[in-house]
Image (cartoon, rainbow, N blue to C red; front, side, top):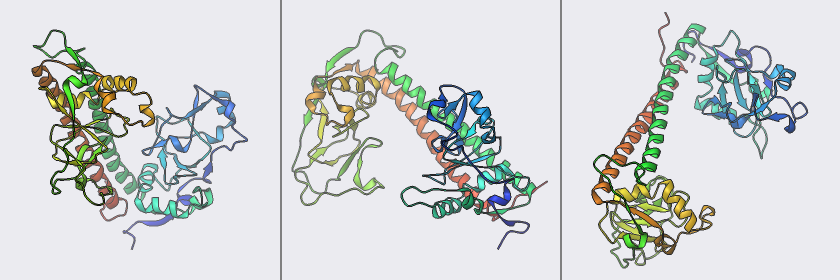
Length: 397
């Protein structure tokens, strides 16, 4: 049953004129694209419900004039015509004046529908399912104007549409602002790592030249086998480090038979990954077992483990490793021999600890921002489901 005052509609009825496709190949050729000019938006440029004109191909003013009917206005909604047909974006002031490109469909809301309300409504999971279900084509899903015209909508009175859109836009601004704070913190941490982990910038109270040692002077390979079968099995990941297999949400293949040949890992050990694109050494906070294919390394001399945990993820270390291990970027396995001859910084222990503490604080700030961002997105999603279906009504002045 529809909420009081709401009505059934469809996208074609809510838009002025016919829905429109982008120019076809006969109207726009590859050689007509330029490095600068007017953005031509393709499906790949519809990112997180926004049109990214930075990634878009460009055409000259003259060619843009020829394709005037494909120009986009603030409030237009752009859909992907092929592939991910649920991908869409709202044209705002930043992308106004760009063109609807090949592979996209344009909808221009009429006076019957407020564009921002329609934009939020089209993000509902039920709409995503409808678009995917009604797309044509077996190998590559395709959407056309005839199908898109029939996309079902439920529309409240226009004042209520505007009030709902205003509320959800406030949440979007909060999410965008927090996302920018997160990006800034991540960038600041990268800069700190580059400066502090190489000695280019020193913390107050520390001076003098750093000692650089071969890896084999600081670390050693360890291989402890025939361990109790009750030991936790560990997985070596590049996004979470070394973690218990039981904690992974994705499906993990468990070993068949005995794990007596598996290697023991203790907290503070590093593990050389089999294939790496982010440095190749992962840190373990856990005691457990890993496949014998991995190389487990422990420190030979006193170190601050956290200092090296950060250093092994730094651009400085990855650069040294890439030189020592030709082909690593093609997924070559890193051997202990490759690693053992690389020179590593060995600042005084107190300075290692101080640097690790600064970077750990930066990590905590990033984690807090990520947590807040996840919470805001979940709360907005729940609010959308209530407001856009009329389960929760707003008061209109």
